[in-house]
Length: 312
Length: 312
Image: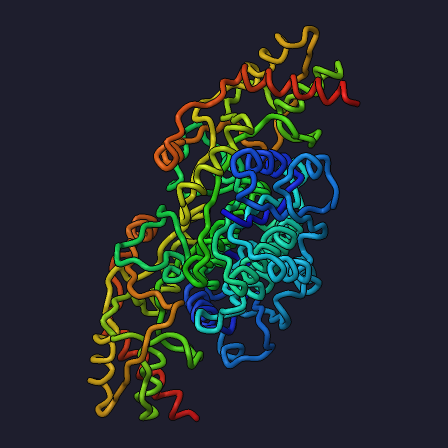
């Protein structure tokens, strides 16, 4: 990796990926950042970011410019126009995620750029099941958010065959940690923010459903390790490989902040109830075995939140 | 089935489905036909066709009208805006196949219509492999034509979960027989037409690749049997379960018409080289076991072609 293009650079995963790339390759890997906004706090503290392009993901003229002006070797595609909770217009999801991705793949093929890391979603792609999902499982997503992710995965491999694109699909579990700004998505972050602000958090369902959660440092390190290991042409589950119930998380948070409270409400049709990832392919490709424990990860995230709070 | 809507009624599969529905349910099953053209020879000889709507597949105002004016119970979705040989604009394939299908699923949900038979493609969906494909195999299509079929399949099952749509996905092998009008697609029909017109047929590859071919009567009977067996929620391979090389077919055709000749040329990137379908699910669901033999099917098709020729 010498010149990487990060699409969705200021998002939760993007921010942490930028910091990790900066830490690991400073001076040898230049980052071209793309997001909706030009400026962002990370812009100032991340010297590997050499250029920033701001604009709409649907603006193909801009992407033509980006690929013409830079000799990009690797694309990190972290853009999603919706989150599971807001994804209800199926046509919009296709028009703002699948179609621009197809356009970018065409641009890559025209400009001789072949490597692309695509951020898919384990929880959304595999659908409802308590069994441990393997990448080779046939997937039937139950949400619009998941369906468009699966469609994009299929198109990536079609372009691999037709145009020599080298995709690496990351099916991510539930990441949590610093720089998670979305106030509606990501239970751990939502709960920690609520705890700090002494607000009551709302839990969809009874809190007994168990999911795989991964600390964001582990997540971006896994993605970089996969790229370093030249894992092109693979779909790889990226998770901690262990599951925790929402109630366990609430318990950890209430130990950090006394008086923290929550209430249960009915689960929604697009929620995945349980999900567990088989991470043996990740381990085999990268040699990665140790993951940050839930209590350590939650504690680090809470410390970061408190620092943010103090800075303000 | 009392009121069925056939989308793509005048195409190859559509025409034969209309004739078969007419034969099997005359008087008890009314057909609403939709296609680009209003009139068609079958229009006159198929009394089950009660109404014809002509228009563009992307015209959702028309579909709103169709679903409002008719109490449809079952939709047969046989429309494809492209064939494998012409499918090179990936964005166009999405915009003219996936997006209107999403719109129609939304219309169905709004009008309380749940049952939909979708015609997918075994050859395009499974990609290159000489192994016998099962419906549970993870699929990685290698063409735009196949990718959009897979995407539509995924969306059908997402709508099943979200809106109670009951899909039946038919992954068809290579059908041949009467009413195949496309001059570029379907080797058997192209070869027979060339034989009759004393033209030379072009074969992509060396003719040794083996594929599953199914006579169209078996195909539409299988589809109707699956509906009769209430096979909703299933993906079902529909093929003969046996494979023949292109050279075998050319041999059968040359026995029907002396002097028939062909030439070989290089295979194209979107061609599937070999493909074999496991049809045990079809057999289990319908009890169907006997298929028309290749030589009988080709002979029947040739007879039909000759009659057409005489009528002209």
